[in-house]
Every structure is written in C-alpha cells, then in structure tokens.
Length: 64
Image (cartoon, rainbow, N blue to C red; front, side, top):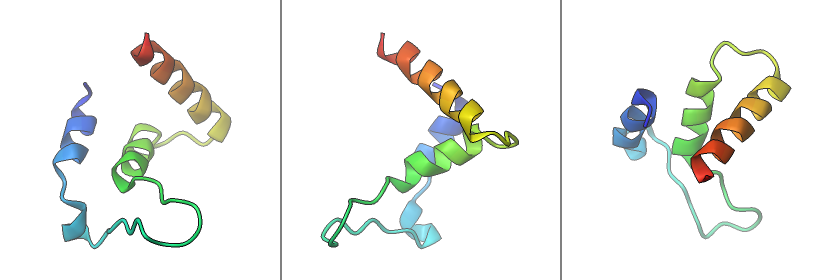
C-alpha cells in the first residue's frame, strides 16, 4: 500500500467539514477519501486521459 493511501485513510473527514449524506435524492456521492486519493495520486498531471490510463493500469494489476 502506498504511503499517501494510508495517510488519507487516517484522516477524519468530518474534522475537515466533509460529510457524506447517504439519504439525499439523486446519484450517490463519491467517497471523499477516494476522491482525495485520486487528487493526490494525479497531482501534477495535466491530461485526464493519462490519469485514466494510469488508474486503469494500477487497478487492474491490484485485482489480479
């Protein structure tokens, strides 16, 4: 597991003022920790396609 992954898992999102309200109408919210991990992982990359390829590559390797 990567260091930033473990660090973000330790963060209490409620202390940052981020809450997930599951009873709202419409599509469910994305998990704030997952979105923060994505931002930290892709920091400095300008291409969304490059980020998508990197995530696909890394997630498929984890699943195997």
